[in-house]
Image (tube, rainbow over all chains, first blue to last red):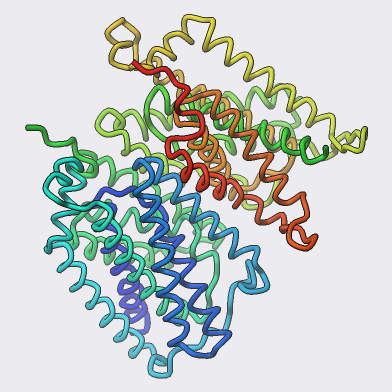
Length: 284
Length: 291
């Protein structure tokens, strides 16, 4: 039962970020490769503040502030750069965030991470935690499905198909993309509030590049831009990843094997979806 | 003076990596995010041949370069060729996937321990500057190699084909330049340049599997800052960023305090952001010929 609840929590934690990312990367075709960079900034903002003040409300407020600020920086870069340049620069921002976390040891404890993170009073048991994560996840599913079907989703798609035509129809790229970046940033804050509490530890290893590869594999495998696909793909890939625990391999082999597996899955998923991931522009 | 020498050493490594990137971007129009892993492949294979097998260093370097060239060719066929004609952004995703596969293989074969190709370095001290014989050789080699690339680009038939394709790929193809062969050649050449960078790193410092992406990003910082398809602008920016990194940690700042060396790699990012604020298309983008 505990393992089932663990799966519920893990899937519930991946769904909001994968839906936010499929809206931005899949539907909007914005080459934002830094969501885990936003995540590391939010995670440390929340739990460093919690450690300093002892208040979850202050921690979450700081997380929202930092998540929004970093998302706005990425949105600014997206408006400033060509799409492929943004891809590279967003990885650079992610790496820079990691460098700061690993070297600002007075505040972050560097590679040791922040241990003994307390859970909120009403989340101390696993069933309650799973229920809270599920409710949060349902909220984000509803929000992203609404966003996808609203003017925002249509404008994102229009901008990705032809920016000049979309602009001629009065669509503001700055406004639409900024909203999408901020929505993704807030979903990431929500994930971070739960994740470190769940394992009682905030550790930089959880924010390295393989985490992003897993996210990218979820979005590409689930059909880019599809909200249903993102949810189903989150469920399937989390089950696959957690299932690997049962293979009897030493930990020094299991980590690279996992990396290898998700690298191959991503490559295969892009191959299968090569006509829909970045489709040829429609011509008149 | 020591900071300038250090910048020359670090800049030479970045120049080798970013030179290949610039050629690939110019000719194919794609970003290759597995470049750092090609560098590590060259470095690790050279280490294995030299330290584990006991082959002489020049033979080991040759072996490292050949294996990296083969891996680069496989990477092209698997993660670039099926995709880049459909959309130039697809290889950005597929090369990330390929880089993860290479990272996993490097971790499985060599584990996380740091390795150095040469254990003992022969240090020299003159005019208040410390530099090793190996570093002098590496700097000289990089400069000679880049001059050779310049000669190929500007004085040979292959170079003219490359430059023609960079300037206008459709016009070049209509004149009979075989784009398929040229694309593979340039991509493999970029892998060889990266492998030389990785061997350079393994001789001068240590190789660790985590270096892949930081190496790639540093090279891309030079590429974006230099103007994405300006080869010489990229080289200049590689050295410029290395100099800024050295100045950032080597000079006293507020109240005589120094910035910790760990923050050095953030300098390249800040540099790019400032460049993008001032010149979004790169420092040397206006110097390129256009048709």
